[in-house]
Amino acid sequence: MATIDSFLSNVDHNEKVFYVHNTKIEGQLSMHSHDKHQLCYVEGGVAFLNTETASYFLPARHFLWIPAGIRHLVDSRTSIKKVHNIFFPTFLFPKDHKVKQQEGIYPVTNLLMEMIYYTESWQGEVSKSDSMRYEFLTALKNIVLEVSNVPLPIALPTTHNESLRVILKYIHHHINQPLSLTNVADEFSYSTRSLSRLFQNNMDTSFLQYVKLTRIIKGMEALLQTNLAVSDIAYKCGFNSLSAFSYTFQQVVKKSPLEFRKESL
Picture 1 (cartoon, rainbow, N blue to C red):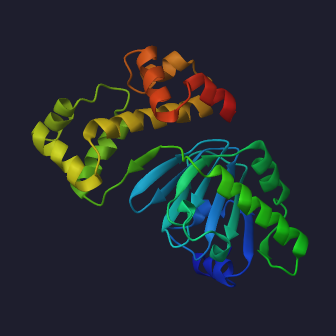
Picture 2 (picture 1 turned 180 degrees about the horizontal axis):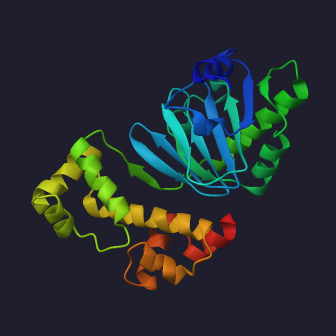
C-alpha cells in the first residue's frame, strides 16, 4: 500500500494534469493537504470531512469539495463501497470563484453522478495527451462550478481546547437527553456564563447552536443508516416531539426529514 507521502507525491507530481483515484484510501490517510482541488464522492455510505477548524457531515448523494492547500481528513462512519476522488489543476478555475478558497458539501445531480461513475475504472494522471479523458474531466469541472453555489450548511466547529473537547464529547454521547446550558454547566462545574463564553471564544458559536447542529447531524445519519420511523429518530436525537425535529430539520437542511431520506436513498 502506498504511503501518504508517495500518494501525495503522485497527486501533485504535475500541476497541469488531473489525477483520478478510486479506492478506500481516504479512510487510511492522516490529516493532509495537496496542491490540487479535490472532489470526493463516497459511494454506498456516509462520511465526515474533518479540517482543522470544522467537521462536515457528508450524506449520501452529496460530494465534498476540498480546495488546494486545505488540511483535511475524510473519515467514514460506515462500511462503504468505494471512494471516488478526482483532483483538479488549480489553473482551470476562475481566480474569484469561491470553490478556490472554501471547502463544502454539495448535492450530486444525476448528471454529475453518472460522470463520476464513468471514471470509476480510471487511475492516475490524465493529461492533454489523452484528449478524450482530459476534455471529459474539464466538462466535469464546469458542472462542479455550476452546482457549487449553496453548500449544505452542516458543519460542526472543532477546537484544540482540551477542556472544551471533553464537553463536546459529552454532548455527542448524551445527545438523546435534555442538554440545557444549565445542566451541562453543572455537570462540569461551570457557571452558565463561563460555559457560554468558552464556546464563543473557542469556536465562534453558541452552546445552543452546537447542540442543535449535533442533533440534526445525528438525525441525518439515522435517516440514512436505519429504517426507524422519523418520530423514533426525533426522540433518539433528543427532540421532545416530531414537530420540533421536523421544524428544526427543515430550518437547517432546507427540506423535510422524509424528503431528505427519499432523495438521498
